[in-house]
Structures are given as structure tokens and as C-alpha cells.
Length: 256
Image 1: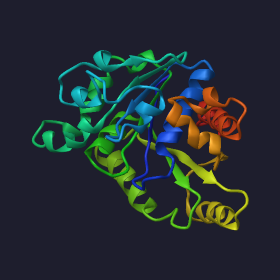
Image 2 (image 1 turned 90 degrees about the horizontal axis):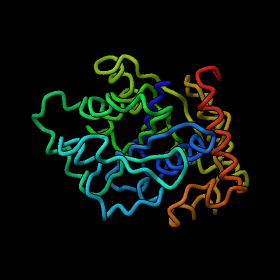
Image 3 (image 1 turned 90 degrees about the vertical axis):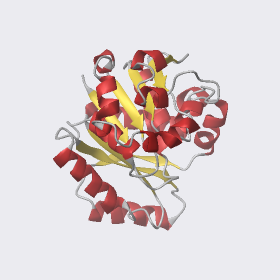
């Protein structure tokens, strides 16, 4: 299986890192061998999986600059079946350093060639912008999963993201498809959340996952403990939701 999924949305605060962390952990819990790649200089996925992002010798930054191999920067986590290529703030300057490099859109893809077949799933957490790091994630991936927050401006910027995905597909990676859209931070107590879901469903042609991720206190607390939600509070609604999402992802593309 060669399932490489980029989790992307140029809007910040939509649950990208939360989804990367917890989808990875729930796929691993289901017995899949998973590698998570943190392509966000904020390093939230790295710290959310219990790795000290300020005490790292090799990260995705060193990998992109050719200073280490993928094997050198993979960290085996104390979570069964789950590994990570970590990130930290050093990655923020990578885009400038890549100017003038040959095939700079394919650096991550080339770095993954020797190891990608070691995993059932590779989950890539993208930064909240449509920059060269995101492009590298999309040339590496086979599909893009788009988290959308249940808020008034949910559709804002989405057309631009879809356009970028189409451009990458046409010019850089003809294998790339949109995996689907997943709603996050859903609050059943508000009419707004329901309206947003209906609005997006009316306006998007893409596949929308049946699983909706709720706004959940335990889900918000888990990253500060360096644990995915299925380990932090296995019975929480957040944990159950991400398990359901993992089931859907494993069934894709049969869930059209």
C-alpha cells in the first residue's frame, strides 16, 4: 500500500495538526504502520506526539537541505506502529534557502523514495500557507485531506486551495487527488455549525467524510501532554471520532 496523504488548508486554526496527530495515531492503533511528517515550522505535530522540538539533531529541515537522509531523522515513537520526521522553527527559513535549487518542488518526494514502501500510511502535516513546503508535501502525496472548521468563513480560501491542488496535479504530480474534506470543531449546540456543514456540502463537489470531529475539551488538552487523543482519553468523543475517521480513510476510495 502506498497511501501518502497531505493534510492541507492555508487557513490556520482549522485542526490540521490535530488531525495529523490523531489520524496517524488511530491508524497505528488499527495495526497500520504509519510515518507522520511534520512540514510545519511551528512543530505542533512534533510536540503533540511527545517529541521535544527544541532538542533535535535531525529534522525535516536538515532533510530538505540534504544534510541528512530520511532514515537519519525518523524518530520511533513509544506509540506502537508510529514514527515521525519532526520539525521545528528552523524550517521557517527553508524556503529562502531552496531558491535556485534544482527540482526544489520534489525534494521531499525524492527523499521519501527509499523508505515510503516501509509504511502503510504516510501522513504529512502542511503549514498554514500555500508555499514551497506545501508544494513539496503535495508532490510527495497521492492525496490531500482538507480539514474545514465549522465557522462562518469556512469556505473562504478553499477555492484557492483547490486551485493549487489542481495546478500541482497538472504540472507536478499527476497522481494527486483530493482525498476528501473533514469537518472539525463541530459544536452541536450551535445552528452555525450545522449551517456551515450544509453550505459546504452544497458548494463542494469533493468527497466529504461522514465523520465530523467535534469541539472537545479532551481533544484540546491532549497536545499539551504530548499524547494523541486515543492514548490521552481513549473513551472521549474526540478519540471515537478520530477512530471513525481512520476507518473511513482505510476504506478509501471505496467510500465514494
